[in-house]
Length: 263
Image (cartoon, helix red, strand yellow):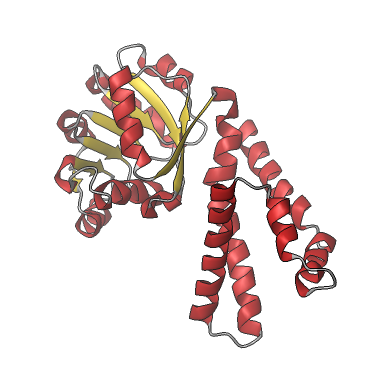
């Protein structure tokens, strides 16, 4: 299968790199087009994909097209290449775009699957949310699920839950990064070198997440296991509760959802 990315921003780079580095697909079978050709060629040299000179050249060279440009650019892109997409499979990773939206523009001649990915896909630890409604052939969809499965956890959601799923998994890495940065700053404040601080905090977050995933335990149970009576951890938990940490996390998602629902 030859794959073509329309757009090569951070998310597309993460996915392309994940595909190539996992050995699921050879770099010579991964193409990409972006209007800034110098930057595209630089990323191609770094990641190992093939840069395409035009949109049309990209679409005619591949079997599967991945829409990875900004959501506001998609209609113009489809106006330019809509006829060339006929008979092809299209995967969209654009926030806010769902199967029905594409069908209204492209009709039934293009097989469509919308996915919400996140940047940890670059290291094989992503979350890839597949919209349940799609028009791929069964064998084709299984192949695409297997391909994206090399980037992390693949889950299917109904259309009405794609926005909230994307808010949690797509925006979540930025929120996790802020938490890591804050705890690392605290470590530096008390004398730990910055490089070690990031390493300690990141590994602690990774380990805590892996423990929850593998054990299936409620996060509250895992938290309680660390909190000894009259101990240090429960004092930190109390401080976080006083600061409104839980409400702040929920407020962040509320802000994302308000933006998504109003655009």
